[in-house]
Length: 316
Image (cartoon, rainbow, N blue to C red; front, top):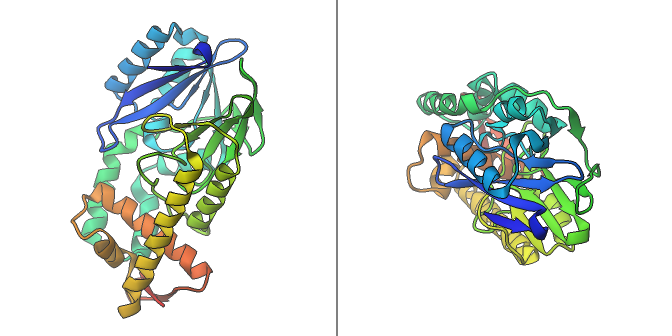
């Protein structure tokens, strides 16, 4: 368990049953009590790990005053309802994430429109919906005590945390900057070993918004990135350059794919990831391709045409 700022911050590592084997939560000392950033899944393994590591840090559940959720993905919000009940803490969330959580907690119905737009065959759509049902228990409706907005400040024992909205991986992702100590709680916006999945949202240019978010991160004079997965690291500007280049290569790959013949997002997934993907991962791949297509379309590099199935066929 990593301790920073003389015990003002503790990194808690919680187990996940995914390829990303762990998620980071952070205990942050307030002027009175503690704040917990993210909560892991709603599983016995996560519950045990968080309580064990809190005890190792010398922090009691009754001392948690606030729980802040960076974004509404299950490995970050799943344990929130249980911890809110145990601690009596106030909940902090960004508004778009709160509203999205309210939608997805109702079941997989929200997936059907984007999957149809992406040209995903009915049998794969059914399998994707089944895989979503398996993680549905970790999407639980929540009621924030406070809605977070860009520029808001949260007082801590070591200076204010400034809310910096960094959409891209999620529609209203909230990062937290501590300028006095050159720290950024980056959630899943910045992950040292991978480029985060960019999730398509209706009416949004999520990849374009992610590029803007990376520009904001690049402009920060921060020494340490405290991410949602993997270890804290330095050198964020080099990471930003590498990630921008990765997405530009992905855009070029997509343009090349549709240059030969019009294709759906589902078909492009098969070219970008030539191996077969499990339904759980295929959903993320389709959303990622749709986000890149939206970005390219808004810049005049590709254009959609309606297909008889209701899907969009993309061409240059």
